[in-house]
Image (cartoon, rainbow, N blue to C red; front, side):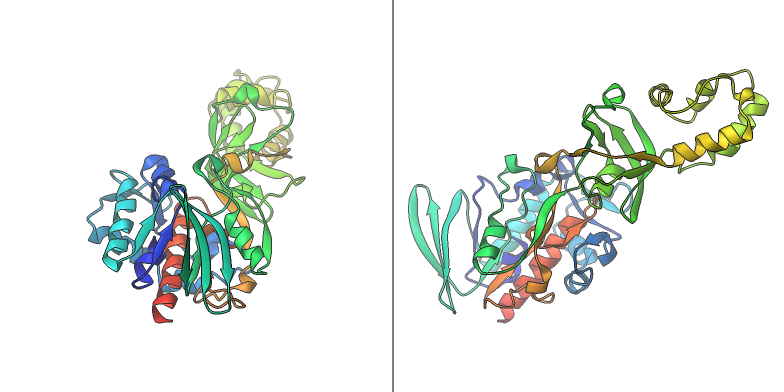
Length: 378
């Protein structure tokens, strides 16, 4: 929709869903986390970390915010620069539809792509709509099919299939921004417990909340780290990143010496989590009985809890798909395929994946704008 609003007249948008922008509609609890105040290339994952710079630099979060303001859509910042609609995500969809209407673009819903061919100058796309098949010819073809995430919303690997058909390489897709699972269901007793934490995977770490589930770990910090985690690797969970627990425990030792260590810890961590940790850490005795060395050892463990997930919840709950069309095959300025005239790939189907918090929507707006501008100028 963003691309169509900028690509000039004669654009047809094809969607197999019953309504446009379904992933917009469900995002942000129905209020659409439509961008982030701090969006910059450093918030994106790609084999080529420089690829996203051109589109993000030419169509910024401030440009999209100005569009939202033009349509008088009320919004607010939650945390960490995340912007949400005050009313409904449907306001963003209506705005994009209005922009399409201004540009004269058409939208066909419940329409499937049966075949695509290219003769060197034009594309022929065979479409199935309302039980009827018809062929469309076009000078330009933009693939904005997203990734495999949330298949119940209709997500498929169609974008990757089209790229492969035309010989474009694919960076192996995998789920991103996804809860992590443990084969022994070790955290089942903690299901529903949340706590602030720093979660590290690979060379990246994130300070936000974690949430224990029946199957493993979720929450913003875990979702962020999951995009940097690979199967078989460990993650590190720091449960005391927000305060100097060692100093606080030493103070408690002086003022609350007769209290059990677990009772004191429960003032700083969820009590159910403290009970759970008794099976992993030496937490017996009163706080007065703990030496400096024991307290230091305890804090070291709490600051670097090493865990090895068995896997993730997969595409079923993943908010994004990592990987996608290899950016080496695309122009960073126009999003066009280098080897196929008139073929463009934008959004999530490209190997550019944002952090949690509105970044992936901003990539959709920026890459869509870049392709639309290129088509209009072609």
